[in-house]
Amino acid sequence: MKRTLGVCYYPEHWPEDQWAEDAARMAEIGLTWVRIGEFAWSRIEPEPGRLDWGWLDRAIATLGAAGLQVVLGTPTATPPRWMLTRHPDMLALDAQGRPRGFGSRRHYCFSHRPYRVECARIVTLLAERYGQNRHVAAWQTDNEYGCHDTTLSYSPAARNAFRNWLAQRYQSPQALNRAWGNVFWSMDYASFDEIELPYLTVTEANPAHCMAFRRFASDEVASFNRLQTEIIRRHSPFPIAHNYMGAVTEFDHFATGADLDIAAWDAYPLGFLADRVAASAAHKRRFARQGDPDFQAFHHDLYRAVGRGRWWVMEQQPGPVNWAPYNPDPLPGMARLWAWEAFAHGAEAVCYFRWRQAPFAQEQMHAGLLRPDSVAAPAYAEAAVVARELAEMPDVEPAAAPVALIFDYASAWAWATQPQGRGFDYFNLVLDFYKGLRKLGLSVDILPPDARELGQYELMFAPGLATLSEGLRAAVATTKGIAVFGPRSNCKTVEFATPGPLPPNLPGLDCTVARVESLPPDLPVTLSNGGSFLHWREKCEAVDVAETTTDGWPALIGRGPVRYLAGWPDELALERILIALCAERGVATEVMPEGLRCRETARMRFWFNYNSEAVCHAGMEIPAAGVHWQAL
Image (cartoon, rainbow, N blue to C red; front, side):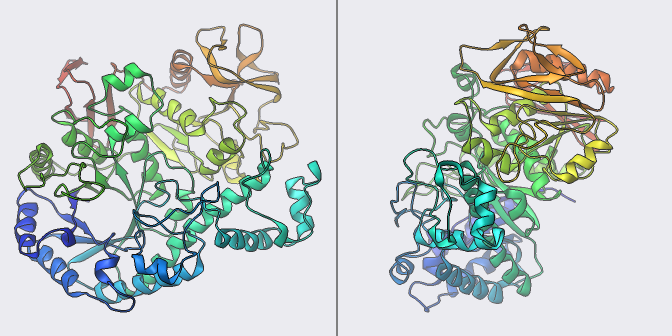
């Protein structure tokens, strides 16, 4: 499959006599895809029932005439103002019961059924009109589900839908009471209609109640998305994508992705470093104009798993963004580096956001490939370079990695519900393991929590996996490699109770977690072979102990195909442990210089230098903010 470049474009923002020139310039620099339409509902339907297709027909025809392919977005992320007049109760409410009102975007509650009817109507009209259009070659549903903290809604619509969800799941209030342990604090319910959403309680709500609400909210996102995909498929043969975000865990992307052909995500490395990456001030300062060396790659591999091999970057940062606490300008070369890193991880397409910087509204400070006056911004030339390089070199075919890492959205909800310590964050725990593997020069595959096949991997890691599925348990029992769990692995049932036998209850491992403790930042637990546990430590009763803490408790347990790590290792301990495990399985490692990362494909090895200066490694000099590749 040939890898391609694209861009996000808003023809409704620009004079129509400018469209043809824009399209010609896009084609001239080697772009293939143009995403349009995802925020255009008020232009498609300016008044209820009055449809204006003419401008969209002409925009698609203009882009197509230049040889470009259109990704058509459904406009359901931005319902027009008249929609709120028609359905004043469609807004989500926040955890304080306040409405999330009109005036920006994502102003709807996933559970509001009349709004879903409106969405089905507009998506049907779009699919009927453009489903066979020769210039439309892909679809995008909505835009950035969950962005701006919009997955969880505490509206009456959400409450009613939640009660119905509970009735279907538990069948009777008595069964629900038993599952949730409502005998505690006299929380029993006599009817599903008595159950409220888990907010505005005097102290913390029952964690089982919270976890059920999180599962319900995730299911609402998936069913909202499914409503659209089912309509589109009835009218169009083209693949359907959704553009996810970075470090958004409020809904299960695997479940939503099951109804899609392509998983896409929106990559903003500098904004994410400033806003979402847990790192020291020195680290953020060093990479302020390049982005974290692992954060983008982690999401590339995550969404490759969500898309079952098919994934895109739907929005790639080209310059300063507008929404982070601080918004530096990328170093020269980074727009090229970010694109090539995505392709090395298997992306089919990378689309820059956006074509031209807007001179108005909320995103007028967000850079594009062009300035507002249509003069080329720095990333314009870098995108042209990437397009030429793609045309000149063989296709980049992905290859299976030697190591795998489990990522589970439900575990993120579990530990957000009951962190037990401020420092315990599931996303950062898994990202630490990913970073540790990448610093050893390893390519990593990310797997879903119900993975049933581990045969190709020498090592599989599952830190913090709240509940071990039967499918994964069976896969672990027959793996040829080593499966490493912990901390907090398999320590909750699906209903958020402590299981019996006590955790971790892993195949072939004689180990019981007797007590746990969360650790404040100034109270690390040192390990006998170097390094420490941070944030979390478990005191285990175990038979086969490979390493201990300096106070005598097991730290690493097991020497066979299943191992258990009884705490959250710091960087020093993690590197040492990973090197030893890789050596045991014959997986070659090399400690990377700071800021240098690599990725192997079927025929190439890529090197990505996130530093602001050149790096010499293995007889090569990789330029600052640069990419280097070698044939294998």
